[in-house]
Image 1 (cartoon, rainbow, N blue to C red):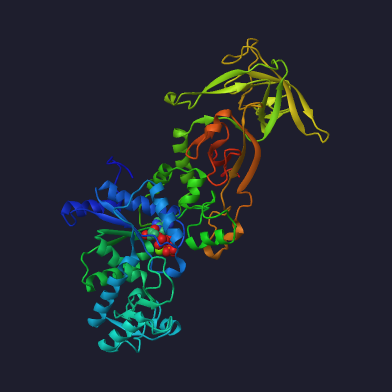
Image 2 (cartoon, rainbow, N blue to C red; image 1 turned 135 degrees about the horizontal axis):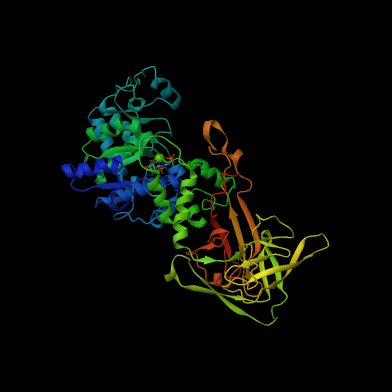
Length: 555
Ligand code: ATP
Ligand code: MG
C-alpha cells in the first residue's frame, strides 16, 4: 500500500484515521477472512492488499482467519494454499492463523445464551416450508409455528441437536428478530444447521454448524477486530451483524465496512466457476498460468508488487464497476520493465550461415543486462559462423515497412554485426530452411563504412552455443469481456488460442543460469519466467508473462 504520501485516502482509510484521531480505537486490527473452499484469486488479492495494507499504514495488526463454517466444500489443501498465497503477496498475519472453527464451543454457548434470553428457538420447518414462511421483497413473512416453544424445550432440543439425535436438515436454530422486516436477512435467520460432515479442523466433533452470519461478527469480536472490511454484498447483512454484537456478551464491538468488489473484464472471479475450470480440466490446475488465481499469476510470472500496485490503482469505493484487465497488464509491464534482465531468445529459429565468417572463429559480444540500469552489469554471448534468427524476421522480398532481413538487404544483429542476406535455401516443399548471408566487416558498434545502413535490428542466438528450450505463449483465457454476465455460459467463451507451446526455441547461453525467481525480457518478444511445474535443468520451459505491448485491442 502507498506510503504516507500526498495520495488522497480512500473512504475506509479516512474512517480509520478518524477513529484513531478521536480515540474511538487506540489501535486498529483488521482481518482477511477467506473460506477455504478454493484458491485465492485477484479479487481476494484486493481484499488482502486492503486489509493488510490498512494495518501496515496505520500501525495496526491484521489477522488471517479461515472462515470455515461449511465443511463439505472446504479442504486443508485450500488452507495451505491460502497461507502460501498471502505470504507470497508480501504479507504476514499477526500470530497464529485463526479459524472460525476455533470458536465453535463459544458460539454454541452464546447460542444457548440467546435461547435463555428468549431470543432463539429450535425450528422444525423444512427448507421448503421455511421458504414459504419467509415471504419475499414485497410480502412480509409469517412466524414459524415453532417460534413460541418454551425456553426449556428449546434448550433441550438444541442440546440434542448437538448430540446427534436428529437427522440432517430436520431442525435448525433460528434467532427471533422480525418476520416482517423489510430486510429479509432479519426474518428470523437460521444460525445452526444439522449436518453430518467431517470438518478439516474439528473432525467429527460437531454435527451442527453455525451460519456464516452468526460466526463472522463474533469471530471479529473475539479477535478484537476493530474494522471488519468486506464486500458490498454484505451491506444488507450489517444489521444482523450488529444485532448479534448487541445481543451477546461479546468482549468487543467491531464494526463492518463494505467496499465494492473487484471485477475485472475478460476474467472470472467466482471460486465455484474457477473450480469448475479445474475439475473439468479446461485448465492445468488451480495454478494454470492463465488462471486469475494468485497461484496462477505467480506461476505465470506476475510479481507481488505489480498485483499490489494494480489493487491500489483500481481504488477502494462503494461503486460497482468493472476494471479493464489492461490495467493489471500495465502494472505488470511497469514492474517487469524495471526489474528484468534482458536476454535474446529465438522462438521460431531459422538458421543463418555467415559465409564469409571463418568456420572456427568465435567472438564474444557484450551487451548491457538492462539498458537503463548500468549497475546490473553486462552479459556476454558467443558469436560464430552459424546463428539463428526468427523465421518472422526474414522475407525474400518486402516493402520498406519491414525493418528486418530481406534478400540483398542489410540488418543489424543486436549487439553484433550488420549482415547482408544473399540466398534463401528451401526444402522440396518450398519452405525456407536456411539463409546464406555475409557479415559486414567492422560493424560491431559501428555503421558500415560504405554508408549502406541496415534497415533495422533483430535478435539472434549462436547456433552452436545456446539453451534449447520450450516456450509457452499465453493469451487471455476468455475472449469475451464479460464471460459470465447475464446468464452466459462462461465455458462458451474460452479462448482456444490461450496457450501456444513452442519447442526447439533457442535462448542465449546465459539463460542456462535462470532460476524460478528470475523474470527476463526476451528482447522484442516480451517478459518470460521459468515454469515452476514443467521446467527442468535438461529442458527449460519458459512462460511468457506478458508481451511488450498491449496487442489485444487491435485484434
Ligand atoms: P464464496 O462465494 O466462496 O464465499 P468469496 O469470493 O466471498 O467466495 P471468500 O473466501 O469468502 O470468497 O472471500 C474472502 C474475502 O475476500 C471476503 O472478505 C470477500 O469479501 C473478499 N473478496 C472476495 N472476492 C472479492 C473481490 N472480487 N473483490 C474484493 N474482495 C473480494
Ligand atoms: Mg464469502
